[in-house]
Each structure stands twice: as C-alpha cells, then as structure tokens.
Image 1 (cartoon, rainbow, N blue to C red):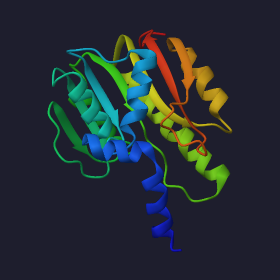
Image 2 (image 1 turned 180 degrees about the horizontal axis):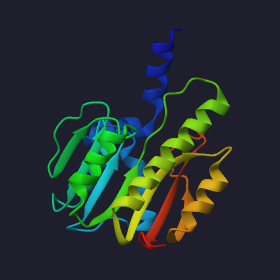
Image 3 (image 1 turned 135 degrees about the vertical axis):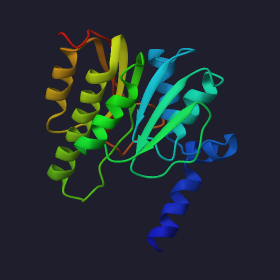
Image 4 (image 1 turned 180 degrees about the vertical axis):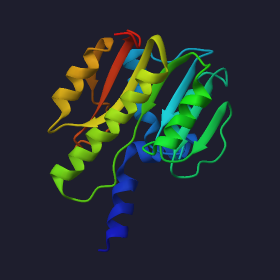
Length: 206
C-alpha cells in the first residue's frame, strides 16, 4: 500500500476529519480550538485577535463563525489563505524582521485580546532538531503576544512535549496570571503536541 493510500485510509477513520468535511470547516484543527475554548473561554464578541500560522484558516474561520462576524482577526501565514469574513490576511514570514515589524505596525493601535498559534515546524525526522524548531516558533509567537496584547489579554500556543518545554512554560508564567497545558481530544493520540493556554497578560512593563 502506498503512503498516499495509507494516509487516505487513516483520514477516513478519523472522526474529526469527517466531521470537519460535513460541517464545512477548512481542517480538522478547528476542533482543537473549539475544545480549547470550551475549557478556557477565550473568545468573546467584539474581540480583536492575531492568528499565527493561520492557513488554511480553520481557526480564523471558527472564531469568525462563533462570533457571528463580530470580531477582527489578523491572520498570518507563509501560505496563501482564502478570504474569511472579518479577517485581514497578511502573507509572509514573521520570522523575518521586516515582516515582524510590519505586523506590529499594522496592529499597533489595536486592542489585541488574543494571540493564537497552531504552528508547527516542517518535520525533518531528527527529533532534537525538530523540537528546537518548535520551541523557537513558540518563543516567536510569545514575543508577538508580548508586543501586541493588551493588559489581561490571552495567548494560546501549540508546543511539543520535549526538551525546552518546561522552560518555555516557566517563562510564560512570568508574563501571565494563569498558565495551563491542555491536550484537546481532537489532538491525535500519537502526537506529542499540547497547547499552552495563558490568560491575563500582566503587560509589557513586567
């Protein structure tokens, strides 16, 4: 059996993959955010948020639909993303200093309530290297949160359990009132991914 056939078979057995298709979501990842919100109540009408690594757009799609369009979302990704109501999409690499500065300039007069990231690095198969890349992306996401969030804003970020995770969590606790780790039911059992939910940003002066 080819790799493609194996992938198709796995997807057909995946209840979240089928459910996403049935309900018109762009990817099964939407259910991770849905379950995160059920646990942490991070969404509210009229909010402004940043969606990092947004493409194909299921997280932005969920927030927009959940808030009936009463939300402003700045979505960022290297990969193009089709339009979504209430979403301003910025295509580029926020690891690039110029693009990072442009993102900050675009959002500087906004009251950012939430920064969310479902990013993961391109997997090389070298565990140590892949883990280091994932922590690097998480640290960049947290930097954007630190630079843009209003006081008592929230931050949600995918991380992978491994070297550097404990330190990342510890450092995040210095900036937020409440920090918890959560593995949504929609995360694949074999995956080491977990989500850091950080609530109530202290502010940039801390």
